[in-house]
Length: 392
Image (cartoon, rainbow, N blue to C red; front, side, top):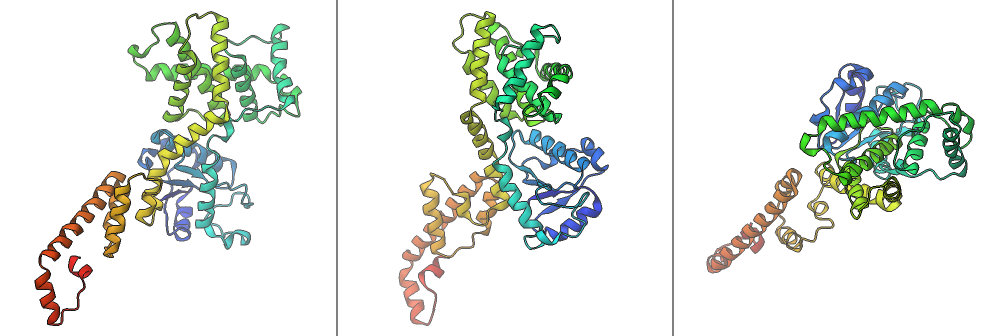
């Protein structure tokens, strides 16, 4: 069954009664104990998190979601109930009575509705802010640098740098659009955070790499910088401490593509390539492709928990034989539960079970025809079975 995570044993007991179609769990240590839990046990599980309606609960939920996503290697299997949109009382949790305006839909319905909404919003925060006031606020960085009022950070691409600073400011609730003065007043702190994020990313990259993986030439070094700068940008835009494996692989592919034809590596050449890559990874097409791959990875796993028929496992399948075999076994009214269980294990084992059952029925039907005289004789003596029953 799908898993629902709540905070506290009391809440878990109450939620288990409200959510009979889910496995409800909690963890030790409350909101502060999230990092002490081995969340890898929920790898490849369909998970919803229903946080307590307070800031520590919301922060814990996002922390848990990030950690499970890392173990999966992609996003899309974990959703967080949007408790703000439900208009719940402060500090409300599932151990409390469901408010009247939500009672009719029920907790099960709220989780299902929320999961669908989350699927459509995985990469929404990667969209580039284009408001003219924001552009003017960001241009003040260049002015302050030229005046010597702030230090110039090291970066290849001005657009990537500005977008990262804007994302960091948004995470600190600084309103670039309506209050550019607050942004300018805090620019040095934003720069420091940018530098800290770059250093932290490079340290984590060094720790996870072998000496053999270190850049060997100018092109490889440029690709490493492009990946680092874009990763920090996306971590800031998504307000996450790290990116999933799939997300990183998409960035790495974009960096290789951007630098593939480079022959010279002057500063202006690097800036041109970095600017092209920024345009690419900021495009709707690139975000849609990432979203599509994440959903494809999640789709097969979700089916294990949500599918109620074999047909759902074959949606979009080009395997004509499988569809024909399914029609064949249904002709005989066979019990499909065993085949369903095989599909829930792996799609490949489900296909094999489908083929095996259909083949067995074909063999049985052939044997029945070979013994047609005996069957006809038995019917003369009152046997009521038809050919389908005999084959089964």
